Every structure is written in C-alpha cells, then in structure tokens.
Amino acid sequence: MIEIENIKNKPIDSNCYVISDSDSTKCIVVDPGTENCLELMDFLLEKNLKIEFIFLTHEHFDHIWGCNYLKEKFECLIVCSEICSNHIISAKKNLSVFFNQIGFENSKADILLESVNWKLNWNHNEISFFNTPGHSNGSICFSIGNNLFTGDTMIKGLKTVTKIIGGNKNSLEESLNLIFLKCDENTIVYPGHGDVFSLKETTIQDFMS
Image 1 (spheres, rainbow, N blue to C red):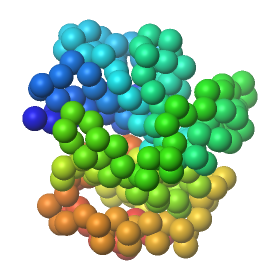
Image 2: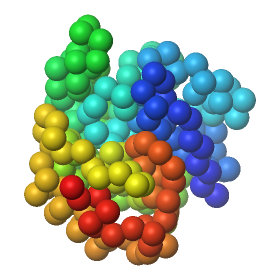
Image 3: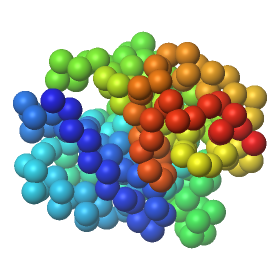
C-alpha cells in the first residue's frame, strides 16, 4: 500500500513528498528543497525509512536544494530528465544564484528518464513519467497509481508561471493537454506548491495565463 507524506521545504514554501510502501523500508523522495533536510530526516528516522530514489520534477533550486545533503547520507539515486540533469549542475540554470547571489550546484542525475523509456518499476508499482516542459525546459510529471506529481506544472488556484528562464506558454499548453489525455478525472494531483487536489476540479484553462 502506497503512503504519501508532504513535508514543506524551507525557506521557500514548496512541497517535498515521501512515497513509501508498507512492504518496504525503502522510499522515494520527491523534490527535496530544504538545504539541511532536518524535518525530512526526522520523519525518515521516525518511520525507519531509507531513501532509494530522489525524483526531481524540475531543475529550480527550491525543489533540489537538499539533493547534495541526501546523497551524502544515503546511497540514493537522483532521477530526472536529461535537461533537468544538465541544469541542476549550474547555479545560474537552477536559479539559486538569483535567490542569494551565491547559489549552489548539484551533481548530475544518476538515472535519466530518457534512458529508461520514461518508466520505472518500484516495489511492484509501475511509475510512468511524462515530459512536460512549459514552466521550465526540464519539467516532468509522473504518476503512480492514481496519484500524479506535477511539480510547478500544475498548482491549485494559480496560473502556471512561464515568464522565467526556460518557460514557454505554448509548451505548457501542450503539456497540460498531455496530462489531461493520460490521466482520468479521479487522479489526485500532488503539486510543487500548495494543496493536493483532484484533477476533476480543474480544466486546462485554470493553469493558462
């Protein structure tokens, strides 16, 4: 049975998710955006969980800041798109230098989604990934069961931001059409910021500016 825990990143209020399975002590962490990961580490210790994979929905610093720390603590593998992998190694391309004028760099991904045909099997669960540029060039979404993780491609009550480096309104519209085509209305959406919501509550136009 899949369990999903939301842990808020700091100082930017983005969402980090822990995906676990009651049959295993290994877990997946999605978008760890806190540098020292203290709250996340406390949760993992409490639940006796060890990170097997880190999934990145896109390359922006508030979703990747904890990667270096977690890679030191666990023998875990970073999974993302090739573009995202190429961008997380640059303080400019991951936007961290614009946040504090110092920035940081991550190592490249261990697994590129292109190399595994956009699918992974984990604890007898098939995880399907979608290439969804628009908010950024390296953006992806992925589904496990009827749970969809969207990063900043879809955030409840907000128009998706495209007026940043790598953003593109036309690409976003194509990506949203793909999501609504592949996912049914009962899909539960876990966004990069804000609250979880059901896909049936929304339309493509809710995210288009």
